[in-house]
Image (cartoon, rainbow, N blue to C red; front, side):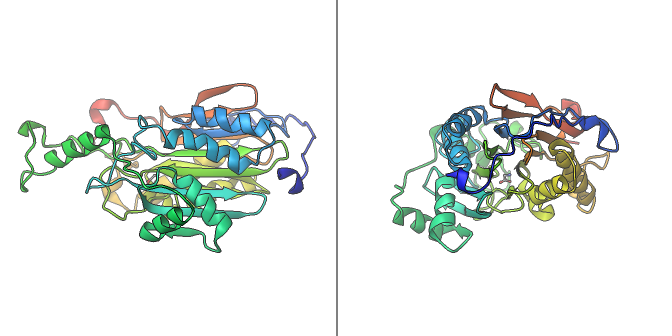
Length: 357
Ligand code: GLY
């Protein structure tokens, strides 16, 4: 299918970029070397099975968007991943609400759903929004009705494990309501950290014809206010693909990403000549700067006290990943091996003992 969109760039120039040479600070860069024209799939750290599946499909000449969606469907279906699809952690009312977007480089088209309940594969519904409507984003009840019209079956997405986690948090929320924690001494501080787990999966790919595509899918913040929409279904924030330049996606604090058009920013930096890794770091740097306007999101050193990660591939097949804080990983299948790699980072993560500072 992708043959009709563009030709493979066979020129093997060995455009390895020494990332350390390109960002002015020159620190915390890890760097990647790629040959032009090779297939590649990148994903967030929970996406190793997704990159494996997507690469398998790329090798069968499947469309890159179908490949990445099939990849993330594995994680959406997995009850053990509490940040995505079935088994995702619920909102404050104990209801799982899912967000997803997809973007197809060759047609520069995209689709998304937000606050979708009872359907475990929002990425598949997002693709249908792209293909079967003239809209880009459907939300809530309308998104659910659209999914059902296309044959999706409603199911309860709240696993017992996720429900127990929700109940535990609700019980510890406050000593001024009718919910009591089993051990009152646990009531304070346990959930005060912005570093608290909030996953998501992003997966982007480039096929053998240098066509790009991406998908981001999530259950969003645990205990979010019902109706809260994160960055994942917002094209330009949680995902952006420009088939002439590259693809980028994100995980982490969606609000920061929405307010800064994060994934668009990464692709834009790549368009101006940055390597994928450098572009991810530049976007993080800009977001860290802008966060200074929101003191409640800063630690004692004036740095963002939340996690945010970007993953990117450029038109040459080079890839990179970077996170606000050290310790992140991302999944990469470069056509030969599929493995987790360390993310470059902007700041060294503080000691655990200081993480709520
Ligand atoms: N990045 C996922 C979210 O904020 O919902």
